Amino acid sequence: MSRQIISVPNAPKMPFSPAIKTGQYLFVSGQAGFYNPKTGQEVKGIEAQTKQTLENIKEVLEAGDSSLTDVVKVTVFLRNADDFGKMNEVYADFFPKDYPARSTVMVGLALPQMLIEMECIAYCISG
Image 1 (cartoon, helix red, strand yellow):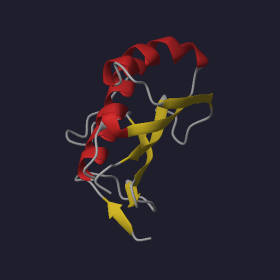
Image 2: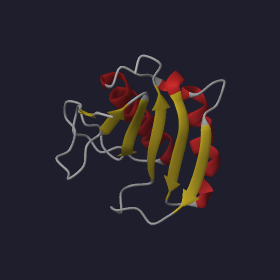
Image 3: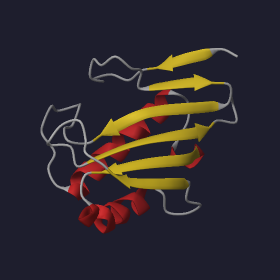
């Protein structure tokens, strides 16, 4: 089975790929939303960071010829359990029906300004 590295403009230079497509699956690496990669501006607050995180995921999915409707599994990493409800409200705007499977865990994140990180797996019929 072959694998294809999926990249996007303005992705930070890190020792991992934004996504890997193999067979009919697209594995999207953890995306954060503490800054807007198009403007370089810092993003603050859980609602705004959740939205930016999901916009980043959407961009990576589209670069891999996929979309949010193809997502079958999401893992959400939250810094603060108190942000769960607000995160869910924004999340529901991006996944309004036929929700993907999801896990949400409370963790310490890599940078102090990060309030959220998400990764996902999409099933792409086009393979």
